[in-house]
Amino acid sequence: QGFSALWLPGTDHASIATEVKIVEQMAKEGLLTYESMVKTIRDPSGEVIYLEVDTGMLASASAKLVQYVDRSISEKKYVTLSVPIGSLGGWDLFSGIGFPVRTRIFPIGTTKGKIYTVLEDCGINQTRHLIRVDIVAKLHLVLPNDSLEVETEISLPLGERVLVGDVPEIYLDNIGGN
Image 1 (tube, rainbow, N blue to C red):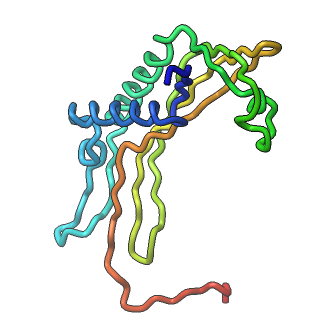
Image 2: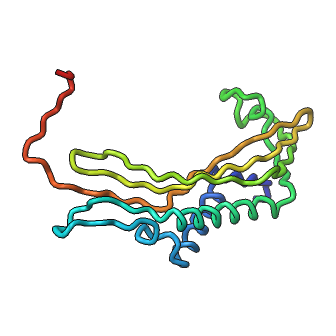
Image 3: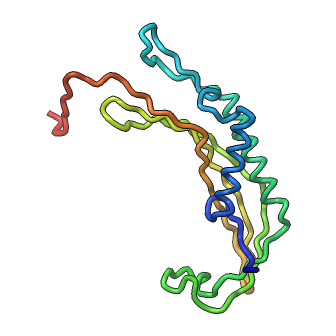
């Protein structure tokens, strides 16, 4: 419709589509398969003994993601955006209401990424292993009478697996602590 749009990683449909493209491209290169990042070590009977995470592979994948996002942001010298004045006041009641105010957004600094590998309990005999990269970008928002720095963050899952163990024959729940 000809409206100006803001690309904030992780917050709009365009950025979600971009994130999907990043992950798809890295998957085509073989960088984002769970098996390429994590080696599952099993005993002779096939039971999982432990997981061995390839930290070099994760660091490389994270660096590529951060570079891609940083390049996407910095290619745009600035973005002009019209925001309803009610959205600038910080009150949800007036968000999206009022005449449009022209603002500009400039990328500042560098984009940073941090890798997380998390094991979560998800049942009596199940553990979820999640690998993700959190990417943080700093932007400078220039308003007609003010300016401020905005930090935006996206979380990109790189892979996950649910590890299933044997179902126990007896399960005792010690909720009361006795």
